[in-house]
Length: 453
Image (tube, rainbow, N blue to C red; front, side, top):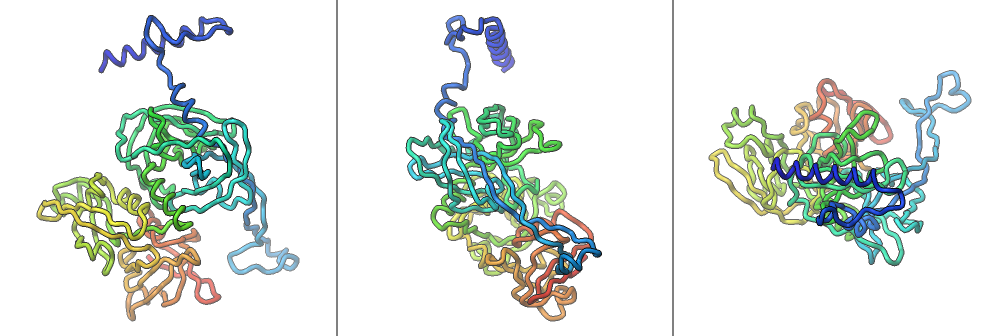
C-alpha cells in the first residue's frame, strides 16, 4: 500500500509540474512516459449533463412583532403572535436527472419549499420551467419534472454496496457559481442524530460540499449516483471536509412512492427503542455492541404481528447491517407502507432470528405515548396528515397524561415553541432534550400550553 500511495503521489506531482511548465497554448499529452494520465474527465463528461442548477422564487410569511403602543393602529393579534407579512425570496440549489424520458429531477425538499417558480438550467445552457410532483420534508427529498428533449439521466447505484474509503465525487452549483466538481472519499456510513432531518441515514464524505450544492449528486468513479448531497457541518455553513448525502437507495424508495402516489406513504414498524451501547450491552447481557435495542413493541403493529419482542436487538434489514436505532428509523422511514422486509434480531438467548415484516401505514399507526415520555402515559397519539400535527386519540382516566391536562381530540402542533409535524419529530425532540417541556396544543379554537417534566 505504501508503494502504491507513493506512486500515485509521484504521478500527481508530475502532472502538476507538467501543467505549470507547458505554454498556455500547449495541450497536455494523453500519456506520460508511455502511461495514460489519471483523469476523471472522461467519466464526468458523461455524467455532468445529468446535474442541473435550480433557481426558485416565492413568498413566505414572516412574523412581525408589534409593540404594545402600536397595536391600536395594527390591530391586536392573537396572543403570542405578531402581524403576518409576506416576504419574497430567491434561492439556488442543485438537482439530478433520474429519468431522461419523463424529465424527472430529484433535489432536496428545502431547495424548493414554498417556491412559486422553479427554473432549471441545464449544463448546455437551456432554461426550463419545472413543476413539483411531490416531496417529503421529513427526509428532505422532492421530485420535479421538466419537458425537454435530449436529457441525460444519471444511473443509480446500490448504496448498500459502498464502503468507507471508496472514492466519491460531488457535483453541484455552490454559491451560484455554476457547475462545480469536487472529489474525496466516503468518510463514514449510517450517520444519524444530526437533527438535520427526521429520517437520517447519511453518507459522510470529505468531498467539498458548500451552499448551493444541496440536491446535487454524489457519485462513484463509475459515474453512478450513490447519494444526494444535503448538508454540511462547519462554521457559518462553510466546508470543512464534513458533508452528508442521502443514500441513493433511500432516494429511490422515496421517489418511487412520490411517482406512484404523489406523496410518501411511509411505512411504520411500530417499535420504540434506542441504540445499543456498551453499557446497555453489559446491563442486558447482550452479545453485540451495536444495533437497535427494542424497548417496546406497539400492540397490533407490524413488529408485533411479525413476532418481534421487547428486548430484541435489531441488527439487519434485508440482510444489511444496522448499527444504530436512528439508522434503523431512517431505513424504515424510506420504505413504503405495505412493503414486506426481512428483519434480523438477536434475542436474549444469543440466537439470531429473521422475521418477514409487512410495514403498516404511518397515519394508521397509533402510538402509546408512554414510550415518548412518562408524563404522557395514558395518551394514545396518531399522526394527522391533514393538519401536519399529532392528534390525541384517547386519554385514560387518572393517567399521568390526564393529570398533565391532555384531552381526547387535542392536537399537538409544537413543543417549546418549535413546530412539530408528527410523532417522529416529537420523539426526536424529547430524546435530544431534557428538563421541562411545554406542549403547544390546539383545543377547538383555543391555543394553550401544557407543561410536562
